[in-house]
Image (cartoon, rainbow, N blue to C red):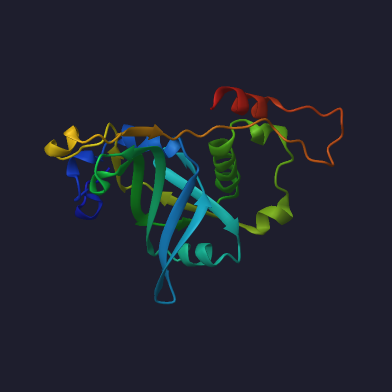
Length: 216
């Protein structure tokens, strides 16, 4: 992965990471990204779900999507993911912070044309959110695939930025009678809520049970 000037972490550079292992780990732990691009001469940022396999990120949407129509032209884009891990409360207002893990990717989007890769990409995105759900549902038919665009974003330029640990106060402020510390932030999946139209005999599938039992 290229370490270019535009992915170099300039503010608090010691928090920057450029290795694939760190970047892929953060990407794989999340499934919502923000995609930034230029549309009709002005900047736009749109959130969307994604999936990663190897050195590629896949996103999808309707064929008429403004974002996908622009991205398939191969313009330069930026994509970011942020995972919040904790609110950092210092003794001073100035030193309050956030523990987080983030990734920024720069690259040129590519329209996926191969029908096999398009279908595989949709499975990759599905698995990113809830593994093995793809095998439990009706797969997209020809009409649905025709209405869907899939975009591949090669991970050629990317960096991660991570902040962890306690607050860092000015030396004199450590004597102040003010509470300081970290409030952890964790994602927790609740109990599944069945669709009201679901037949009573249909129980929660394995993918749902695995997600709600193992990821909290």
